[in-house]
Image 1 (tube, chains in turn red, green):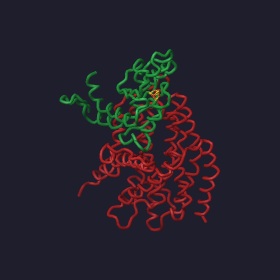
Image 2 (spheres, rainbow over the protein chains, first blue to last red):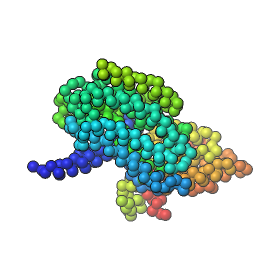
Image 3 (cartoon, rainbow over the protein chains, first blue to last red):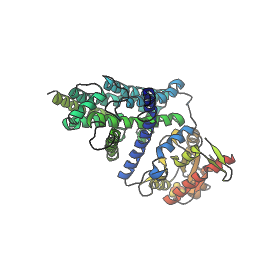
Length: 316
Length: 155
Ligand code: SF4
């Protein structure tokens, strides 16, 4: 029998840990690009590896090898620290999500709150990066990042509290375990699921809500001055955010790695994750960009009352 | 990570593979009549789909590898072209699309143009045509990618 410490180390570094998460991030990026291309009647990446599956890897290494420019006017320390900070912050919550078992690698009562807190911290780090690069476009992008957060943060939190109330547990693993005996919360709380989906789309800054990096208005938004290694890390962290959004939806509303007939729970988790990424890409291909005031108005006028209504329905 | 294949005179290894597989382009109109721009956009659109080769269009010079310039460089655009070229992180390449960008074509001898991008910044690939077909643009981009390793060895 292998000692427990070695098993834990392997878990942290290989299977549900770093290596697996990197592969998952690259895979989700490829799938997203390919799906959007298919919706637009294109092929998408095709010649990089089989069906272009290595495209995100190629992008990542190319960016790592490029020149790394720090603008003269930038606040150098903050500018250099922010990409690493964003990457670390977007990767940490993934360890709290049960992927291969009913309980996550690390879990404790209240880790749902930690996840929400970290998703907010990511936004603050992005804002700092935008501010430190002292570019007029990135400053506007940074302001929009902050403004958008004021809009979607509250409904997202309320929507995620719904499953926590019905399962009487504040940890993601606890919520998954309570769905093992009951039914999936997407059936009892469809409103909450929809609100969480829309808010996560806004959190990911994807197309209907990509105001912070609106390419046709403010070049690349808050990312505009980042090049080379920093851009590679930021792109990677965006992919981690996509995986995190998908796996949050899976574990809070779709029953996590619960299945009946497949050999290993992680296969089931993986399939559900693909469905969630499919929905997110679908919305990205279907809609045009909203304005920032429309985002805020929609979030406060419609999403927040809907999320509250869901909570009231759950409590009753 | 970077090794030279002496027989082929090319850079080999992970980095050059990655570089050849994901060239991101930045489109800059240096006074074109919009014909070349439309053709470039057409080659990014579903029918020709440059993303097959991993080519994406980027908005910011800091993210791009290849500067795609269309049009004879007008006096007004010259400084901007220079500045955008300087803003791009190296290694970087330049493609001149259309007869105007190659030699100034109908504007040759005009008082307000520089008659070609190569009078301002070094150009790697010229694509002729007025405007060039999307097939020609794709061919030019792929020629550039295939010659990348060779160029870096000569320098
Ligand atoms: S080459 Fe022809 S199409 Fe292109 S910018 Fe010049 S005149 Fe216009």
